[in-house]
Length: 209
Image (tube, rainbow, N blue to C red; front, side):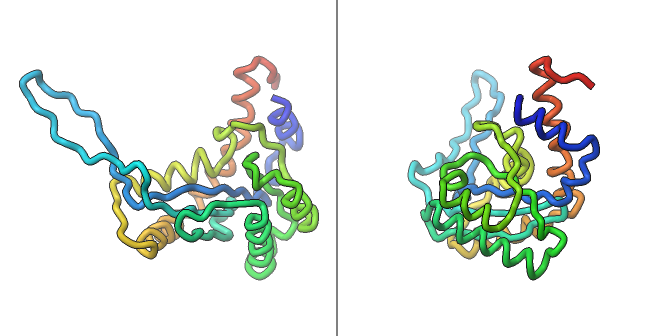
């Protein structure tokens, strides 16, 4: 509630959202078989469905994006996980991309969740060095993280029922997904934030307009 109140009171107009960069990570599976429910007569026999392997091959995608589109993305090596040191290296690469290709985001306002690599002391210092303003984000609130409620939800729908044999196949498909999305898609994900902040306060009876 406190975070949403702070964000809503920042400005009545939300033109500053055009400077917002948000980011997150997601595991992308090689096998995205979905088990579907089906209504059957008592005398009917259901079709067998493949089960997911317990320990699947997967790659982690890390993406930074704004209301205009993807700023930078990376796919980690197979089964590689993210730590604070790697995250700081990624932040520097994002800064370099912004300097070269997105000068309008030079004074970025940054939004990410409270995963450990994101809030480690070394990461906080790196963000200070980059001179990025970091927006408050309540813990355990994927409904207030655009990458969770918008980008990754759409990406998973795109991956559903697809099976990949190689890292390159998976990487190419993720790249195709990002390339297929229009500016309106990314803009909607970012500009939906004020409505979601208001909903949090309205549900708790603490928002008066």
